[in-house]
Length: 154
Image (cartoon, rainbow, N blue to C red; front, side):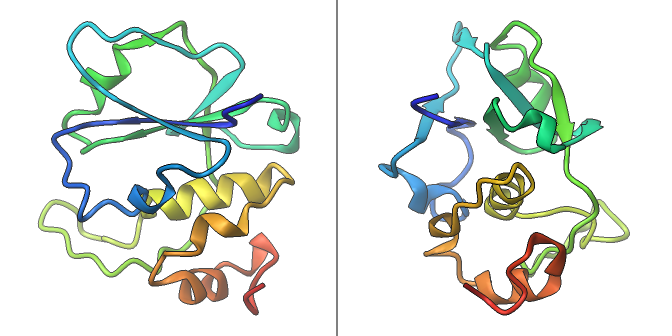
């Protein structure tokens, strides 16, 4: 698949705070900004989503679809998907992204978008280390998640 990673992005999210912004222009990564009336083709992809079957090597032939938005706006963006791509979730992993939450008791129960995307490539057997090139907490994330196979860095 030419664009193995497709990112549907909420334009209301600040690109300055987005961990995915450095991926713009990378080979195999395509960004689409959400807009009213958008219909996004999803054939041949799985949706990286917290609800669904756990991602497995059986999904390796599919492209990745990641929706980058706030939890509150996620249902709106999901309505723009053409078809019903299979939903796949990641196993429990630890984030290195320092965040605070006034909405959740445990702010560690989730990953930065870049962490989730990178983890998916690893679990599919096609790790893309370059995705983390500009991620400030790269080494901490890799060390916290040895099951990805990069605990000591590259």
